[in-house]
Image: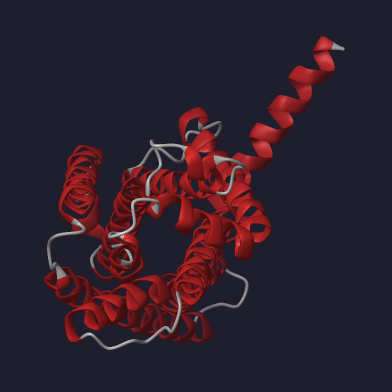
Amino acid sequence: MTSEKILSNYSSNGNASQHFFSLFNNSTAPLLTTLSLVCFLVNITIISLFFIDPLHSLRRPSGYLVASLNVGAILTSTSSILITLPGIDSTIVLSVNVFFAVTSVAATASFSFIFILSYERYVLVTAPIKYKRVVTVRLVQILAASIWIWSGIIGVFMLKMFATTDHQWLSLPFGILFIILVTIDIKTFIEIKKLNSNITSITETGPERSAVSQAIKKRNNMHSRFALVVVLLLLNFIFLACPMFVYDALSTFNKKCEFCLFTSNIADATMYAATMILFICHDINTALFYLILIPKYRLSFVAMFRKCKMSFLKKL
């Protein structure tokens, strides 16, 4: 997904890239660069955890999906860092079209993986036995490759046909998928609360200090943490990622109906930069949620840190 209105404003100008990036840099470069760098470091940390996997707990179906989501975040942050570098407006490689194509690939992939992760969580909660049988690493790898191919097609489409093609139809499937995404996450949260309620009733009727009771309480705590992660990821997506997609849809509507929502090119560049900043904050938060709230990621990070520390001390 990209901003049609910005490109349509500059497409008739031979100096389009220079004009846009100068506005983009002058208004938000320091903040965008800082957040993009943080986003890059946090997400590269989780990808490193996935490949090193010190506790052998991350290379599972959900781990591949999370790693793919991190790759999308790295792609977004890297492109954002590059456009804020001094003198980037004079280069040919990162023209307006190319920049929007890259962000299209990253945003499309991120949205797709968030959607798949939501459905994966729902299946895990509602049908754990079926989940272990159906959701395999092989299936997830094929699914991840398909998503990246689809996202690449979107990026090429934006790059080749952006200035000459009306593609407002792209907003429709994303809107439908968003509604489905919210519905799945709400149903997942409700199912988790039901499980917690059933577990609590069993605990209250059983021996207070029995091994079974303790195991049930532990399972209850895990479900509560899982419910918290589902809620946080959903709110994070709605308030930080959705503004970019909403702005894209509004830009498409404005172009089609010749309705001027923003009064100047500076306003266009600033508004798009604001949605980019929010989207990068979404990528940062998503990575931090997994790193802090998911035990296997947190413990793997601690194990990798200790391993690096021991290696460093041995060299000394």
